[in-house]
Image (cartoon, rainbow, N blue to C red; front, side):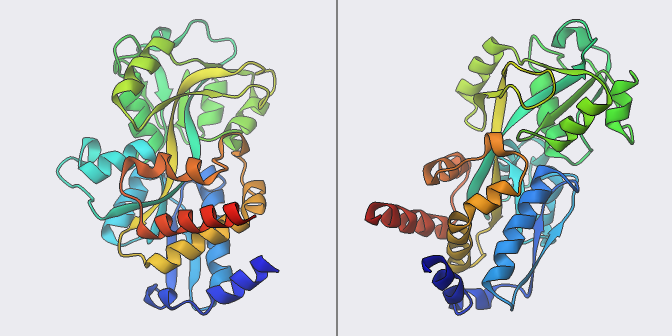
Length: 315
């Protein structure tokens, strides 16, 4: 009854009047985790008000999403934490063009760097120097971040042949590509489908490099890919991860953000059931907001945290 009353009150909230009639959430490739999550957020938006119609915009990923936010092509987006921090500061691929009006709404899940090779591949990462690799589509966060990390000393150090096959899964299985690198929550449908096409294994990311790098870069953390999520891949794989963050410009109305995030909290069980990356989802308010603090939080997120904290104390 409390949740039903909450949804009824949402349609009367004055903060929604400042929203565009059509709200666009930039996501990722169709069928991917970002696309699934954006669809669930749109479902919540459309429940809140018949005056606002939310739509999901498929994209190549984080880098394109940040460009869409900058030029007004999207109102909200899901973005890798490391790319978000670079965009906010105007660093890396965003050098000279800081997006200081970006605000984090919440972190949704951790995205471990996932390095996929054929099961028959001999050797670790250094053996892939000079070999053909697929690091993601040109404007994806995976490509930008994997390129950065694999270039670290002791790894591939930029010595690879990057390719963009139309079917990366088939290319890996047929030996046209020797490595696929992606940042994603798990289980991931792309890897599930790939494992059905040919035997694969996941490479660990060097533990010493992880520890030293994370100590200097708050956008990353030591992580692992859980075992038993994919056929014959039973043991956890050590790696590095960055959070996926729902982000908007600071002009998005405070009351709308508060309502959306509380609606997410009230319906989180269904939300989590409808996305595939269940192993890496952030399930508690502190876990949702602390990783998002790479950039300033939207004021609506602060209000949401206070309201959820009060509700939990009263129950």
